[in-house]
Each structure stands twice: as structure tokens, then as C-alpha cells.
Length: 317
Image 1 (cartoon, rainbow, N blue to C red):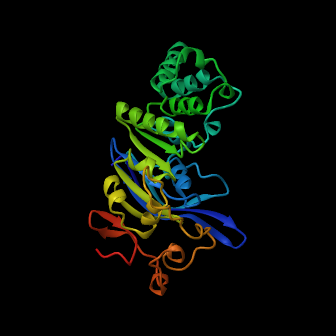
Image 2 (cartoon, rainbow, N blue to C red; image 1 turned 90 degrees about the vertical axis):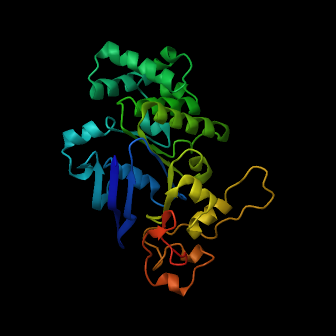
Image 3 (tube, rainbow, N blue to C red; image 1 turned 135 degrees about the vertical axis):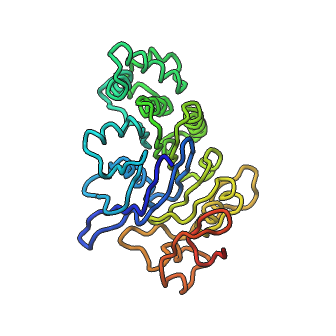
């Protein structure tokens, strides 16, 4: 396994106590594998993604667990070792390209700087690498756009530039945190396909974070479904979509528009509980059609159900 996360817990302090945005998450990503992490906003997906690079924003903190990348625990690395991992061994593309791209620096200069830092290239070689990378991500006339500032690019072009920046250190793992959420719906599928093409061409692993289960299902090898800070289902993408196990996964699929379908969409009642407002037992039970008093007794752990892992006491093994 390239990445192994074990019992990850991430907390944020409040007057009422510590709120657990991520509460006991464990998963693996193999060499060359594409793994999707899906769930509604507020489930903790982005916090998991940032934790892999030890980038949880203050005052948040990783309070427990291990994050093993290439056999080393990211959380115990020295600052210099961590700098080599961030942007080098692991690349990160944010939801909003503005979070990745410096608005006052030219696009090419930003990409070239990462290439110089992580690949040891000189100025001329790093600039040539920036042009090549922009061409790789489908930017027309890449030489021209290396001289542009981020505000001069369209939303889709900015995300292509952010992807070029994310892979400029030649990472073994790329984390894409909601990379299509800020884009027009007509551009989302194109950009998502581009991530898959780059991942396959370079042989790297990809963690694709999204609230869009349909978008992820078409491109991932495995899917992890997250709810209220915990993983509730893990399985092969085709199986999760065709035969969902957890009631939350089923609810997400029923709320997903399908081209040509005549049945009305079914909204999931209620909303994701905040870290300080989670109910006892299964956090999904107040919104679940199967939820009853039995579901409040204890928090269900992931267990093997057929060909996957599922955290629900109502589902038979």
C-alpha cells in the first residue's frame, strides 16, 4: 500500500469541548489506484484530505491515529522531510483554484518554482517543464499562458493550471479535493476525465474527493462513503453503485439525477449533524428510514458485508 491511514481523529476546540470533524477513519490506497471519497458537505472529507499532508488549519489538530505514506508516518516527519512530501511525493489540488494559485504571480512562474524545488531543475529547465505541464493538462498555447496571471484564465483553465501545479513535483499520490465543485456543470466531467487521464499516464495514485457520487463512480476503482466524520461504506465502485449496502449510500443514490429516469428524486431528510451535535449510536439514524431505538445503543463499526465494508447493524453479513 502506498498510503495507509489508521484511526485518524481530527478535532477543533470549542467552548463546549473538542469537536471531532474526523472520528476514527481508516483506509488504504494502493499503487496506481483511484479511490473516491464521497459524502455531503460537512461530513469531513476535506479534513481527511488535508490531514494526509498534515495541513489541518489551526486551531484544528490531528489528535490521534497514523498516516503512513511510503512506510513513514507523515505526522512524525521533521519539517524539512514534510516539505519534501508536500508538493513532491504527494500533490494536492484544491476545490477553488484560487487556493492553489498565487494571484500576483504568473502561472508559469508558480509551476516552475515547484519544479525547481522538488526536481532540482535550473531556471531554464523549470520554465520548459512548466510549458510542458500546461500542455499535458490540455491548455491551448501553453507558452502563452505561462505568462498569464490567474485572473486572466477562465474557471476551467484555472483548474487545469492548478492540476499542472499539483503534478509539477511528479508525485506518487495526487489528492484532488472537490476539484470540479466550482466549475460549470458542462466543464465538470471534462476536468474529472482529465484527472483520470493524467493519473493513468503518470501511474500515480489518486484520491478524488467529491460530493458527487455519480462523477466519482465512473472514474474510481473503489469508493469510500463518509458521513459525520466516519467512513460508513468501502467497496469497489461498480458494486457500491449497483448494490449499495449502507442506508446512507442508498439515500445518496436515490437523490442522484439519472438521465432519462422518470422517477422523482428523493431528498435526504434533515442535514448532516455538526461535530458537537451528533446523536448517540449511528449518526445517520435520525435521517434513516431503518433507524430505530436499537441504532442509538452504540456506534456501529465497519464490518465485512459481502464484498465490502459497511457500518450498519441493520445490514446482514
